[in-house]
Amino acid sequence: MESILIIDDDAELCRMLDDYLTPHDIRLSMKHHADDGMDAVRRGGYGLLILDVMLPGLDGIAVLRAIRQWLDIGVLLLTARCEDADRILCLRPEQTTTCQSLSIPRNFWRVSV
Image 1: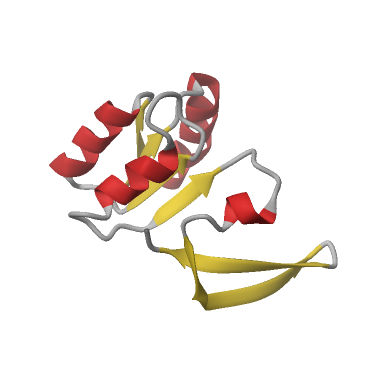
Image 2: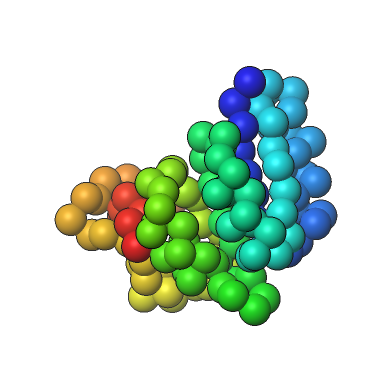
């Protein structure tokens, strides 16, 4: 069984993701505070981290920078920010893949803070 950690203060979103992923044999652990999430990452055992960029207090970008000090884990960033500059704040543009989505080109970068 694959294991994913989500760090997001939106409990309803976390429950929705858990409802969707559990039938696919994916175990989702949920933390709603940055410090609790970083402690869970330190304990290990996760194949992927889903991280809210706009966490209260210590934001997701700061959390990711801290985690990158000791671990290289796959990360999906959740964000409601709309500006491209906000979206690429912690991404490395030299590793890009362009795809078409609704005829709007989007670039995806490997997260590396």
